[in-house]
Structure formats: structure tokens, C-alpha cells
Image (cartoon, rainbow over all chains, first blue to last red; front, side, top):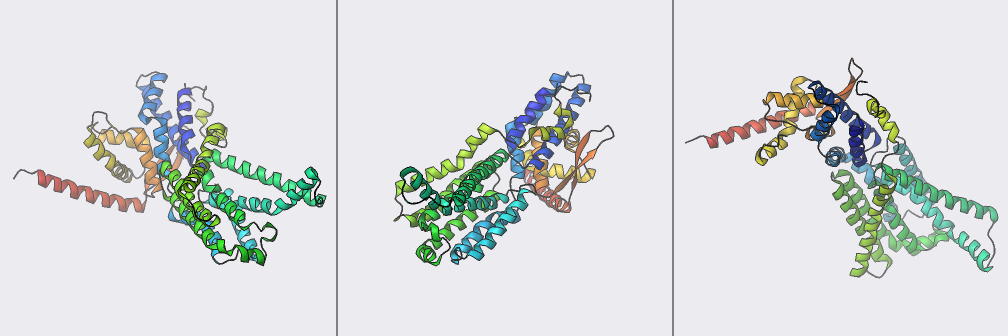
Length: 336
Length: 115
């Protein structure tokens, strides 16, 4: 007769949006409570069905319970907030000091970002990890951007027989890089959305900023060259300002408790960051353009919610239920 | 919480639930959720009937704030429970909350006293 309780706890779990270890802890504790409470009620002479109903009623609506427990755990410490804003500030430093075209500095920063991302990924995926993961994935976007002219050259030759075909090994490598990058970005985003969809916009927030910057410099074949640097130094200040705003966004995200406010902060501050950059890319922003940017950013922030509705929440459902052994086989007798 | 408790009393109770939980965990040295619910009901002679939907989020909040610490313990029958103990930070918070509550109730009693 544990079907009702299992489905109640399934619903709690689908709304928890916590890291897997905390979710298991919450569900184990809730499972222990249900076991004890229903046993006590059965001893008082109630049937299994009545005992289950009373026990579930005492917990209230699963959505509300999950929301309250989420809010108890969702606020990160100041150390976590500092960790979350650090990659944005490091990147802002690269731009404010005009260091982004120095290959050695960029390599060291890239190595650090990728190392921190992998460390966090293999150590429980804390909330501060996601901005770092965003910059790690952004390397793939930059890589794709740098190799785009070669692909364009190949496309032009194949479709219109213009120019010459690039080296076939280089072309093959670039194609493999494109496919691998796309697969890695999609796969990572899906895994993040399964954990909690609001972490996906937190992770992907640097993409529109870096995309806007790449669009702005357009000197893809000499991205680390002095000519490109001189030509695009004008974007250093707006880029660093936009990245500092993203840092503030990440800090606010970690410190806020309520999901709706977290989403609001992502949408509003994210729009502000992009608007700062877009204002310098164009010749000033009109009100309708600003509205359009806000709408697009809002769509960008909310679209992972649709993805989560389609793919569901949680990475490994059975692993969690196996931790709560008496619920892992809902058809088993309560006397187990 | 008891449905019949008027809103004013239920607001008072909600705002002080963490203090009651901290007090009982401190007094018992360690306690688990269901035990706390029963004990609050018994001590208040049925006046306070906490719902599990209130107590568990409160316990998680207290743990997140570092006021209590939870630990799993296996019982002789193979079942498990999560027991909570108060931390030093929790003891300090409890002292402050109790002092504030006593000061408040004393002041209210003084005001209510007929002149």
C-alpha cells in the first residue's frame, strides 16, 4: 500500500530542485517519517489506506512542502556567492586590463576555468560551479567562431566552386570539433536542466555576452593579434561592465532564497548586462530595441523550463529510490 | 498547526516554531522530527499540533543556518532515523531568542496588568 506515499514523494522530488545528495537526504527523512507515522496509525486501528492518507495530509501539499524545503537549502553562503561571481570578475579583469589578446594569459585563465569546472563537476556539482561551466563551454563557441572562415571557405568552394578547398585534414578536424562542441553543449545543458532548469540560464548567461563581443570584433582570423586588439579595445570597457553585472547576477542568484526572485534577477540583470554591451555595438539603443533585448533574454532564461517539462527532473530516479529501500519496491508489504 | 487556532495565534506560533524546536532539541540532547512533533503536542497538552509540513522545512532551515546538525542512525530493527543535535551557534541563538521572548512576554504582561 505504499503506492500513494511513493507517488506523493515522487511529486515532492519533482519540485525539490536540490543537488542529488540533499534530495536523497530529504527523501530518506520523509520516507522514515512516513514509515513511522503510518505504523503508529495502524497500531491505533486504522487501515493502511487511512493511515497513508492521514500521514500525507499532515505534510500538506507536496508542491508546498518541496518549495519550503527548497527555500531552506537554496541560499548559498557568501563563500559560494564569491565563487560564483569569480569567473565573471576574472574575465572582466582580462578585458579591463586589455589582456584578452595575450595568448599566454588567456591560456592560463582558460586552464584555471576548465580545472575549476571539472573539480566542481566531480565534487557534487555545487551551485557556484555553473558560471564556471558556462565559461568552459564558451571556449567551444570561441573555437567554432575562429574556425568559421575555414568552413565558409569550404562551403563556398563546394556550393559555388569559388576559391579553393582548405586542407582536408583541417576541414575534417574542424567538422569534428563542431559536432563535438555541439554535442557537449547540448549534453551538458540537458544534464543541468535535469538537476534544476534555473541553473541552465545561470550557466549559459556568458554566451550572449561573448557572442555579442565576437560579433563586435569580427577580426576572427587575428583574434589574438595586435591589430585586432587595437581595433576592438573600444569594447573592453563595455565588456568588463557587462561581465561585472553578470558577476553581480550570480551573487544575487546564490544568495536569494525564492525561485521566482532568482529567475527575475537572472532575467533583469542579464538583460542589463547585454544591453550595456549592445549599446556599444550599435549606435545607442532605442526603447523598442531595449524591449526586444529584454524579451529575448527573458525567453533565453525561461526556455530551459520548457526543456525540463519535456525531459523531467533528476538524473537517476531508481538510484534515489534504492536509497529508501522500503519505497524502492512499492508493491512490497509494509511489514518489511 | 491546529486548524482551529486563530490567525493571530498561528502567526505567533509560526514565528516562534524554530525557538520551540531548538529548545526541545537542546533539552533532549538529540531528537528526530516525528518525536519533536509529538513532544510539542504533549507538552502543550494538545494546544500546539504541528504539522509535519511545517516541522521538516523548519528543521532543514535550522540545519542550513548551522543551528542544528543532523545525523542518520540505524535502529535495532534495521530502520533509520535522522537525529538532530544542537550546535554551539544554535545554543547561542536559542539563548538570545528565549531572552527576547521572556522580555517580550514580561512587557506584555505588565501592560495587560490592571492599574
